[in-house]
View 1 (cartoon, one colour):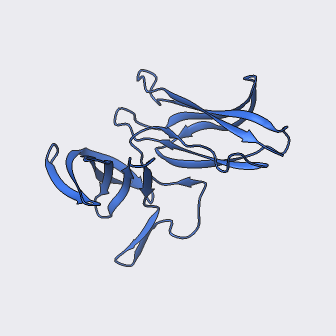
View 2 (spheres, helix red, strand yellow):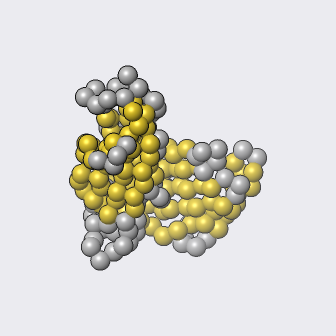
Length: 196
């Protein structure tokens, strides 16, 4: 379907109108493939990415807190693409917006997981510089969990608070565009509680 076309569909009994955006490159199973981004504007916000030769690659629904699903692997005509068994610290996926999730569990003792999304931004080429740092209640930086260039996708990291006292801590995600002339900075901070 060409760019700027519209079509209707039903999800959970609700009518949604979808808008087809331009093609974009998606790196799946080590191969760059063409993909179409589709946006829905019904009662629930919807975003789909359809990859040429693969099918539905990513979908996001913004209802009741939202949910995101991305394809990590598949078998088509007897050929395996991506990873099918096991869980990686990073999941292959493309988000349309930055997102820092609440750590889980929270409160925690002594290990917790933090999940975040680095979106595909058509203005950017290359990796985004991502930092994820932990701060104490006084604002002092006590740990750096991530400090590197990351490609678009969903990531999950663990923090072990064994060497720190019980209390309130903050974690901050900062994403800067790969190209210095493009303003694509994002930051978000969330609170977590370590209970021993």
